[in-house]
Image 1 (tube, helix red, strand yellow):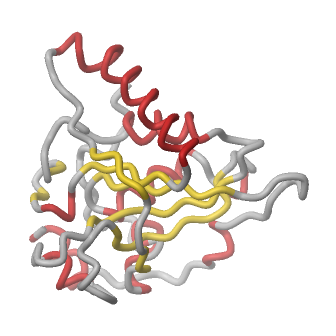
Image 2 (cartoon, helix red, strand yellow; image 1 turned 45 degrees about the vertical axis):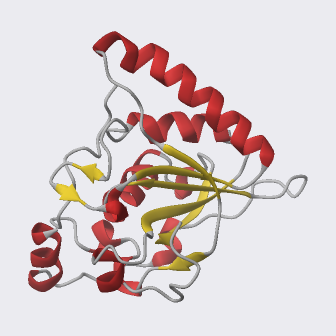
Length: 203
């Protein structure tokens, strides 16, 4: 948390072209789909997805947004400071629009697990609080089924052998609020900015 606040205060953001981090559907025969994940500080979550699925290389991710979801219905239009207080119960999350003919939801869920620690409750690295919880917000019954299956597979293959238990929440997608503009593509604007050390390839 302190590292992130220092980063916000000390770094001047270079100019980037947001269009460089978006793409159009490669075919009109299917509709784009949405995946919504929370796995700690949303700066690093968005960064690692776009780093490995760059829209310019047509790997399936069309565009992303970071924001807040999974909070109290009474907490409308939450802002960064309010979410950080923990009073709204919102999670910092990334909303991914993707082309299912290029990358499947199964693959995105597996990558989500691969790039953070899903065995810690309300924590990633030094970042603690409910806003940093691990969660999958599924957008359809099919996504729910896939998320449950992939979770079981990852648990068996990667965490049973080391005696750890996945604590990721699987929840229906709820109201989404885009985060403030300065959070969008943050680590592309600020390459030296704070990044949670858990946001890396774990296998």
